[in-house]
Image 1 (cartoon, rainbow, N blue to C red):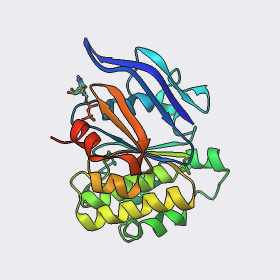
Image 2 (tube, protein in one colour):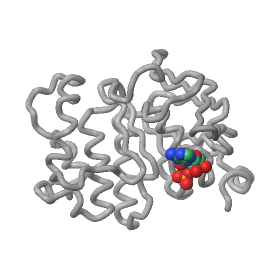
Image 3 (cartoon, rainbow, N blue to C red):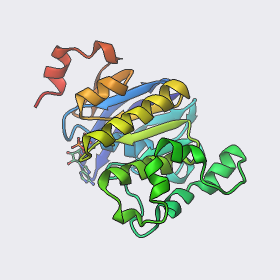
Image 4 (cartoon, helix red, strand yellow):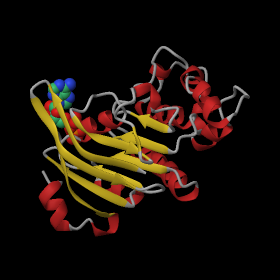
Length: 235
Ligand SMILES: Nc1ncnc2c1ncn2[C@@H]1O[C@H](COP(=O)(O)OP(=O)(O)OP(=O)(O)O)[C@@H](O)[C@H]1O
C-alpha cells in the first residue's frame, strides 16, 4: 500500500535518511523502531510531505505522494498524529475535532456536519471535555484528542509518532486497545513509531528496525528476537 523506495533526506548539509526502503502492507500494523536519532520522525515527516526528500519515491497504492504537497495527505486518507500531539491549545476539544469535518465530507460523503459518534465511543473522555480548551487537558487526554482528530477523516492509514511518550499507564493501555480495535476489527492500516518494546509487541504485527537513516531489519513482530533487540534497540 505504501512503498518508500531509495529515499534520501538532508537537513541542510546533514544527511539523515540514506537510500531508505520500506513497504507497508494494507491492513498491517507496523512498528518503526530504533534508537534515538536514527531518523524515525524524519521518515514520518517525509511521508507526510512536511519535509522534502532529495531523491527517491514515496508511493500510495502505486501513486506518487512525494510530488504532492502536505495538504494532499488528509484527502488521500492518511491520518497523522505527530510527536508532541500538536493539538490547538486555544481551541476547544470540539473545535479541534471539527477541523477534520470538511475533509471527512469530501472523503465519505457524510454531510451531517457532526463529529462521528464513534470518536466518543473510542474516547469517552472527549465527550466529557467537549467544551474545554485543548491546552487545559492532561497529556494523555491531549493524545486521545490528537488520535480522535485524525480519525475524524475516516482514514485508510493512521500514522502515530510515539503516542505514549510521557503518558500514564492506564491511558497507554486505552490507546493500545483503540489501535488494536481499529486494526484488527476494522482493518485500518497503522504505522507506529514506538520506543516501548512491550507496547510494540502488544499492538504491532510487523516491525521495521532503523539504524543511521536506513531500515536494517523487517519481519513479523513475533520474530523480533533478543539478538535484534540487543543490536538495534538496547541502549
Ligand atoms: N530540523 C532539524 N534540523 C537539523 N537536524 C535535525 C532536525 N530535526 C532532526 N534533526 C536530526 O536528524 C536526526 C534524526 O532525527 P529524528 O527526530 O528523525 O530521529 P528519531 O529516530 O525520531 O529520534 P527520537 O527517537 O529521539 O525521536 C537527528 O540527528 C536529529 O538531530
